[in-house]
Image (cartoon, rainbow, N blue to C red):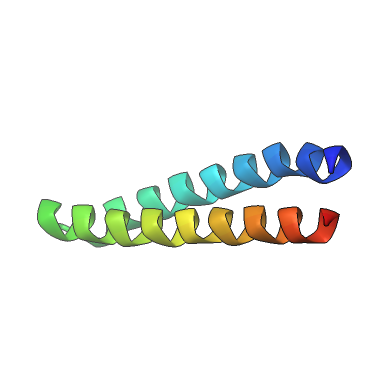
Length: 63
C-alpha cells in the first residue's frame, strides 16, 4: 500500500496544476465573473471526483 500512496502526491500536484491552468484559461475566455465562478466550480468538482476514484482504486489494488 505504501508504494501506491507514494504516487498519490505526484498525481495531486498534477491535478492542482491542471486546475490552475483551467482557471487561467477560463479567466481569459469568460468576461462574466459569475460564469467564471460557475466554470471553476465545475472544474473543481471534476478534479475532486478524479481524486476520489484514484483513492478508491489505490485502496482496492492493495487488498
